[in-house]
Image (cartoon, rainbow, N blue to C red; front, side):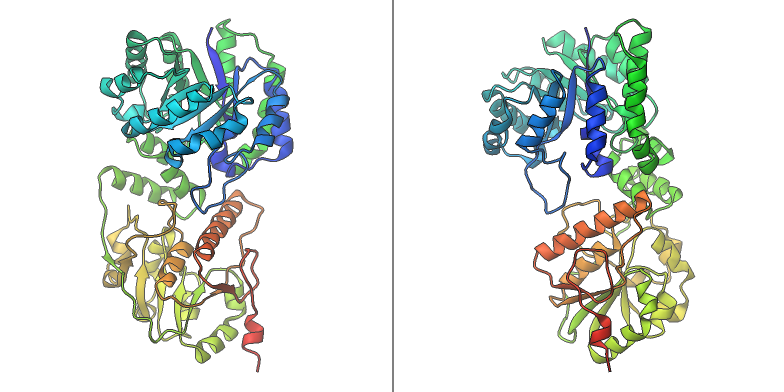
Amino acid sequence: MIQLLDCTLRDGGYYTNWDFDKSVVNDYVKYACQLPLDYIEIGYRNPLKEQIYKGEYFHLDQDKIRQLKDQLKGKKVALMLDAKFIQPAEIKNLLSPIKQDVDLIRMAVNPQDVERCIELGSEIVKLGIPIAFNLMYISTGVITPAVLDQIIHCGIPIEFLYLVDSYGGATPNQVKELVNYIKSNSNFKVGFHAHNNLEMALANTIVAIDEGVDIIDATVSGMGRGAGNLKTELLLTYLLARDTIKCDMEVLGKLVDVFKPLMDQFNWGTNLPYMISGAMNIPQGTVMNWISTDRYSENDIVGKVIALQNDKLPGFSKIDQIDNRKVEKVMIIGGGPSVMHNLDKVVRLLQTTNYKVLITGVKDLKELSAQMRAFSLCISGKQIHALKSVEAKEKEKIDEIILPNDTLGIEVNDIQDVVEKCYQLGNISYPDSSEDSPLMLALEFAEKFKKEVELIGFDGYPLSSSKGQILNRVNQEIFNHYMNKGMTLTSLTNSSYSVPTSSIHAMTMN
């Protein structure tokens, strides 16, 4: 009998940053208990390795795990570990407190990191907790017989060896061949985890079932990283039609209704960029970041995905050494309404203090540049396109244009008359390597001056849209990172971010 694992709280956390409203979780658990689901994966138990906020279901504590275990009324509880965050010596302290409340620990396994994952797995089984290896990237062809044999002959008991279509680009033939190899060469139970970039999640899962896999993953409404996963309701409907399971469809409908508001808010699912990235085996997280922050148009993202596949990486000079002797402070100007509302006060500040001015967009550039001798631009995405509309007299005042290290898809026509002013920052300290926020670029550049940093125009985004919520969260994480590193930040205009504040009006009062 095939087993089913629902991982909505874990995989869906990529959209909510692993924070879920209590009522959503309570309703999810209530209805999941009434459905033919064997395992419920409730999130991650990862130690803090990056100075970035991630929510409760990424750092699950003992009390929450026990509470959910009790609520799930006999369902098996699974947790995910991200192997790249954890060392073998940490396993005992991390998992001993919860070993009575967890029925399965799953690890995301990079095929290039199998040996270390086996070390981690060995420490987990010493605690008496069943483990699953979730072997990633099956669509790329890197899951060779040698990789599979390394796991098959590792000498530790593995509850499930999962095949994970990380990029959503696997074909039924790939799934069939890999399942058959494991089944023919081991006694391991096999699992399958599908992503839906090419809308092949169900087709690939059907093949996996027909070839004898033992457990299948799904999420409610497909909620999951990037283009999302196989839908739990679709899988259960398919199995019900085949007379494989019994399922109360009214309860299933109520479960789907729980997640409709989140679906409306985050709008996960496949689209052209995800389709291309799936076909070309490009990471979901990279494309998801481009889409969710709305810094790029869909055409931009398609261009970036194609450029990534073709390894077209335009390079620019790197800024390493900074002469800061003439700089008293750094001023970073954002795009909030308070910039133009307080423009006269900004001008007064510039007249009294020798600032290095960094501007994070081109929206107010005409008005700002008219009041300045020189400034630097820190931009990405659509802002780079907008350079074409910037007048020559404004461009003359630009000292540097700081671009992200990811320059995929940048059009030469956008920057051809200022290309000599375009730079990158080399090694960036921010832990999320996919982040290309103008704010992050500005703070990273500002750090080189080793001066106090004052902020103008970081009002915060409206919370009425998912874009605003995501950008507020991302910006706060960026501020937190640089403040934790010791940077002195002060917002001189009203801001919804948790940063120290002062008042531009007091500073310029005459």
